[in-house]
Amino acid sequence: MTARTIDEVLDLLERQGAERYDEEIFQLAHAEQAAALAAAAGATDALVAAALLHDVGHLLELTGRDDGTRDRTIDQRHEARGSVWLAGLFPSSVTAPVALHVRAKRYLCAVDPTYHEILSPGSVASLERQGGPMAAAEVAAFEGNPGWEGAVALRRWDDEAKVPDLEVPPAATYQLLLESLLRA
Image (cartoon, rainbow, N blue to C red; front, side, top):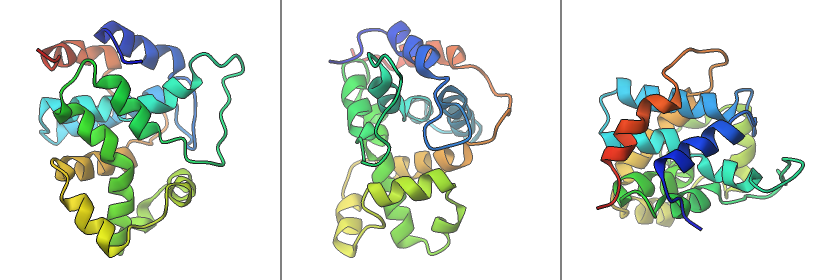
């Protein structure tokens, strides 16, 4: 299944965005903060969109579950689920950073000795489920992905976008930006 309209994407954020996953912040607020950080950094529209939508896979996992729960003991591969769902609407300049943002965390843990120290407790816990820091061969393979640098930038905004009660523009603010990125 893939997303069919921008309204469907924004509706998912609104409907399921009150969920907290491994963090102290609601999923919608996390998405909005990540997009605001990307925009403030002067990122491309595609990276701003990827920042807003990078965790939709978490929200898709909740869709259709009566109790809104999920198994937090295994890696649900939300990055793959989200990028596939978004691929029906957006080009790879949006979906590739979404698909790579978990690997970007593993990459940064491998190449930056101080990076692990800035991870939230939720990110530390999920890092273990996601395979831990990359080995040298994985680092080289990751750097071979087109757009890997954008995924690393997205990962850093993801890490910073966890401030409770921070006011930033709402997700609906990005509707025109998202529409401008639709696949031809």
